[in-house]
Structures are given as structure tokens and as C-alpha cells.
Picture 1 (cartoon, rainbow, N blue to C red):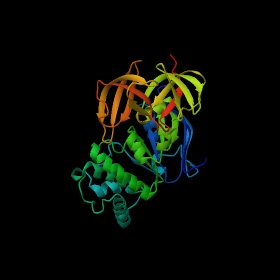
Picture 2 (picture 1 turned 180 degrees about the vertical axis):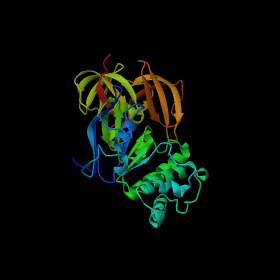
Picture 3 (picture 1 turned 135 degrees about the horizontal axis):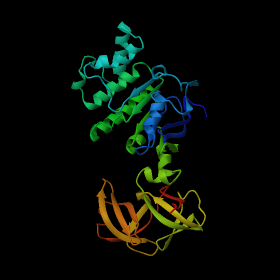
Picture 4 (picture 1 turned 180 degrees about the horizontal axis):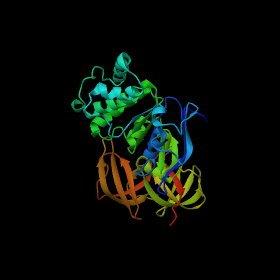
Length: 357
């Protein structure tokens, strides 16, 4: 499917180490895509390939049907906000925002007008003469954003845009950033290792591992319909336990787990043949009860209060560790409990081929 921005089979190596491995993605105009993955997954290299700071070994970058793979960064009309903002401390706010415009030959009254317009977009109207050192971290982030938006780029690239902010400011700035980008309607790609940030900001999220695309989809799809074991374990909270697939039941797949049999009514995809498998399960897809037939039995080792519920860590008699969501004080560390699938498990239980030993 063609789109506004396309990454076609991009690959990049550094000294024989693969950083990006045949990566293909398509964005529609105005879409906001998060690149999410652990350290070394290729997120920042992908962003640098988009910006033109790195040249791919293979593949193409296309924007508005225009192949820009060999085009210099300044000629791509992409805006970039760096992790550390890269603001000039000896220049005031207006001069920082004007910097990119001046490199394009904008001068005089037109320069002043566009600087003011860019600052207005980020709710910093009238800040032209403030010194960078007088601004809060959130305000500095918005100045960097105004500087990137000033030249009216076709695409906006953000590299860990909120990582330098404290947690409280990060959440507020994240909300402001989402509203701003949707208001401007600019196609945006941003790098983050924070799942909350990716889920909150991204219309879609691309999960990367070792330079390869594992899955791309809405946050809801990644959580409820993970494509593989890595995505299931990386996105959100989960526990993993070895099971034996027994075959189909009346309402789903039957599995044997620590000497008991469970029937998984949904989420057990792909359908696996009888034999060893790995079950990845969300905390809310399990429930606690008294030790009883049909339940995995174990001991509560930890309780972590998270507001409306608590997360309980259970060490099962078979040696597995399960995380279960439940009422805040339903059980205490040291209690013996049973664990069974929740009646509202939804898409929270998934089966995958057993890991090779």
C-alpha cells in the first residue's frame, strides 16, 4: 500500500554488525508512528536513515512519491528534534527558532513572522527574547519543537523527545505534545524505549528487535494480538510458563500446566499442535482463589499496590513465577493460593511454540 512516507527494505550495517535489517514501513499523511524496542534494536539508526544523517546500504526512503534516499538532510524538508534538544545557549528563544529558517534564506519581516508563528504553535508566543537558561525543561523541549516546525517540514522526527524530563513533567508534556502534533497534522516518527510514551503518543507502534520489525499496529492490537512471543513479553506486563498443548476442547484449546488442565477460550493463537508450548499471560487474565482442583498452587511472594488493584507475584509449586492482578488486600505475602484463568481473560493469554533448548 502506498502512503505519504515509505521505508522500503532499509538495511544498514556498522563494521559488520546489522543495525537495521530489511525494514519496511508505510505512514499515511498526518500519522504519528512510534518506534519502540530495547537498546540496540535499531530505533535511532532508523530515524537517522530517515533524516539523511546515515546512508542505507540498501533500500529507499520515499516521501510524497519522491525518492529522497540520496538527498542531503537539509533538502529533505524533514524537521528533527534531538534527545538533548541541541539548543544554542548563547542565543535567545527567537534566535534559536530562526536558525533553521535563516539557513533556508528567510530574512527580515518574513523571518520574524514565521518565528512568531512557530512559537505560537507551541504556546510560547512572546517568548522570543527569553534566554534558554530561563526556561523549564518542558519549555526548552517546545522551543526545539518550534525550531523544527518553523521551516514547515513534510515530516517531523523526534528522538526520545521526553527522556530528559522528570516523570511528572514528562506526562504533562506528553499530553501537550500529542495535542500539538495532531493539531498541526504533521506526519511524525518518534523513537522511544518507554512503552507508556509509545502507547500514549503513537497512532501506531512499530516494535523493533535487532534491527528487524517484529510487529506494527495500534497499541490495542499489540497488547491483545501479539504476533510472537517477543512482542507478547515486551509489550505490557506478562508472565511466561511452559505448558503442554492437549488439543481442542469445547470452547477453545486445552493445555496441561503443572499437573492440571486449563481450557483457554481465547487468545491462544496461533493454534498449535499437541506438544510442548509456551504460555504468555497478562496479570489481569489470571485470578486468585483458595487452592482447589484445576488451579495451579503456589505461594504469594510479593504484593505491589497500583491504585485500584495490586499485582501479586506467585511462586508456583512447579517453580514458575506468575504475576496476577487482584483486589488490593485480597491476599498477603506468604499466603498459599490457587491461580486460574480469569472469567474475563479476554485476549490476555497466548500460546507460542516452545523455546528451543
